[in-house]
Amino acid sequence: MASRFLTDPLLRLKRSFYPERFLTGRIRNGDLFLSAFSPGRNLPLWPEQRISLFPSAPDQPDPIPIPREERIRLPFLLFWPFERTVSASLRLPASVTQAEKEAAIGAMIELQLPWPIEDTLLAWKADPMDPASHHAWAILKKDMEGALERIRATGFIPRWVLPESLCVLERFLPRTSGRRARLLAPSPLSGIIDSDGGRTLCLLGRDGHILGEGAFLQTQNDPEAREKRVVDILLSFLSEGHSLPETYLRSPEGSPASLLPTVSLTAGGEEGPPARSAWAILSSSSREDSTALSFLKGTLAWQGERQEQKAGVRVLAFLTFLLIVTLIMDASVHLSRVDHRLGEARAALDLAATRALPGHRIVEPVAQLTQELGSLDREKALLSQGPDIIRIMRDLTTSPPQGIHYELISLNVTRRFFTVSGKTDSFRSVDTLIKAFSATGHMRDLVIQSAGLDIDRKTVTFRVRGRHD
Image 1 (cartoon, rainbow, N blue to C red):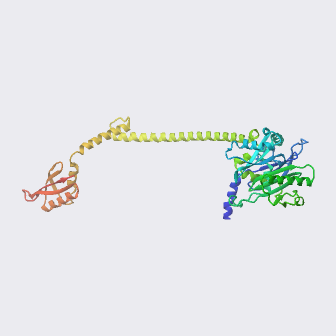
Image 2 (image 1 turned 60 degrees about the horizontal axis):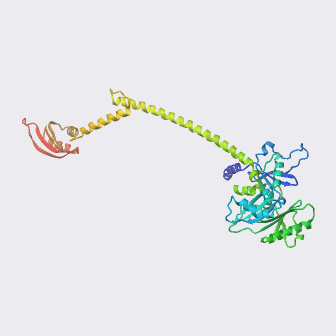
Image 3 (image 1 turned 180 degrees about the vertical axis):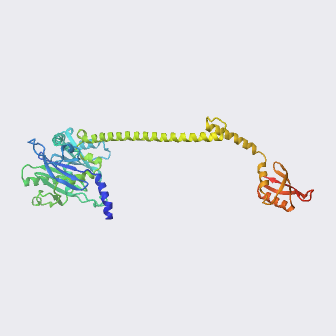
């Protein structure tokens, strides 16, 4: 229960980052085969549906359970047929920058094209193990424009158009999270032969990267002619310097082993809609890699991205404006509170100045109080010059203990010394007074200069000299 309590919210959070529906399409003989996949739940939403790109009847029912107004907003990946694609494995010099890569690939693949390079759309993928090694695809721009126009009539707009050979490679050799680190233990070379309704594709691949590719379309059901062309493609791989694997994975309609005695064939690959493979390809590619893999470049690039960017800019501008308004309102409230506090402080200061300066008209309380404080400091300085007579008088009157009384006759204070003359009841009281004066800490080195009976023979007069602070 505790693990589900933690994992279920994390799973829901993870699903919130994925689109609710992801569409994948394939073109077959003028038809669009469309499938949907839910990346968050990792489940297909419906079986692959066929949509005719050349509808004969305008009232033909639409098999796709998505309203037309919602279709334009759904992420849609289209696989371009491999039989209408020219491919080549290339090595680019290290000096070629990312901005120059398309031009360099176009110059290297131009000799293999049956049409001018100006009418070509390119896509490419670099080998993660060898960044200089690239596999490139070229298609005729006019074919793409016509297909996009017919697809848009159905309400869907592809965001990406990728080579279909990538889907075949992903279908036969799906990615697994437990795959060994390719840098430490590279996967062996794999061969794939896939046939689908007269369309045949031969691939050489390793670690998700295509090393060699050849495809053809056969309108007549002639197995021997098909096998001969498959052998020619495999021999072309040898002529390009590739080694061939002993075992080839094939689709159920692939080449029979009896016609290829030198090649071992085993059935492989998952059946069903390619939406899961399409999402795996797209989610494992960076934004830069997915842009390079897609044929939609330049004027054919998906315009919805720009619209989304513009919409995002508008939303950002609105949020920025809202934030600025909020900050202004917060600053206004803060200034109002500060002004209120200043008013209270000013009133308290006026009241304090009125009490401290009675009889004065309060105009500038701070300046007037500062002036009064300076005047008091000057008076304090004058009073503190010389001995502190007030403190000596206080010690003389407060230091004697209870029960000891004396009469102060005279007090003579100089800069460093003082002399006290007085009258008390006994000589013992004189000694007590001397000890009390010394205990104050302000009168030191006390000396009795004289002590004797007075004329009345009942009191003792004394004279004491000492130092003061």
